[in-house]
Each structure stands twice: as C-alpha cells, then as structure tokens.
Image (cartoon, each protein chain N blue to C red):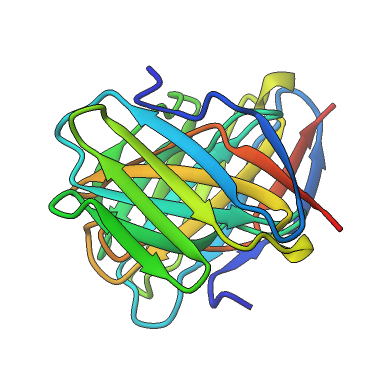
Length: 110
Length: 114
C-alpha cells in the first residue's frame, strides 16, 4: 500500500541550477506534507513542511508546492549546492499517521 | 546530534534469534515512532507510542513488538529473526501525537541477520 510515491529514484543537477523533486499521494485525507533530507549513516532530518490549506511554503532556498487537486507536491531547491546532495523523502500525514515515499537521491555536481 | 538516541548502532545476529533495539526520545517529546528501511525502500512505519500507550500501528509483523516505558524511552523487540529482517531501523520522536511538527529521527540501528 504505497500511499506516497516518489517515482524518480535519482536526480542529477548542476550546481547553481534548480532541483525539482516530485511526490504524489493517493490519500485525500492527508493534511500535512513534509520533506526530509537524509545523508548516509544519519537519520532523516526535517527540511520543510506545508499544510493542506496552503499551496506554497518557502524557506530560504527551499520551496514546497502543493497541488491538492492533482495530489502532487514538489520541492524546489534554488540554487542547488553540492552540499544538497542527499536522499530526499517526501512524507504525508493524517493525524499521527505519517507515510513516507521511497526517496529520491539528489546529486548536485560542481 | 538530533537529541534522539538509538542503541546499538550496529547489530549482527543469526536467524532465529531475538534482539532488542532501544530508543531515547528528544527531551520533552512524548511520542516515539519506529520505522524500518530495507534496501532501496522508503521508510516503512511500524508503530507509534504516545506517553506510554500504543497510538498507531503500521506494517509491523507479529514477530515484532514494542513498548514505551514510564521514562518515555522505547524498545523494539524483534524475534525469530529472518534474513529479510535485515534493515535500518529508525526511531523518531515528536512533542505531540500528531505529525504536524515533523519528527526528529535518530541515526538508526543497522540490523544484519546472517
């Protein structure tokens, strides 16, 4: 039961360009959406979130967009930096229930 | 250091054995969540405890059990281990029983079953 899907296992971008990571979900009851970043040998760390009542949330170089009608969210990183290279997990929650996607490995090339 | 402590960091054991993974949540957090990450898989939710009580259950096998103690630390018990149980097990904590504020994850326990 994959309620949250990240269809791109990997993404490679040039330093300074935009990185766009995508996520789709199936459960219309999800009311909060989050992105986590994970480096090797570490646990995921919270990056940015958005409530279902909004369609955009910005935090520095990171912006999350939510399209409820399409059940789609995306994370934009501008400009991308080599230190952004990591696995990014999309997550969606309803109350205490949080579901994660399989992750997208982002590689930012210098 | 995220504030969530997981021990041990690595564990190697044989099939059929039983192990216990331990998690100390971030100070002040009442909820503890356990997740399993197998190779190339996303984070699979196993179980959540809030202030000592089981609050939500995910894809947790019957061979697995967990509990949260009065001091809020949690233990995940895995028994009759199989090769397929080899995975990273993450613990996360949050202040409430909702996910709105995001979770704080520990660095995980890597379990290898041989």
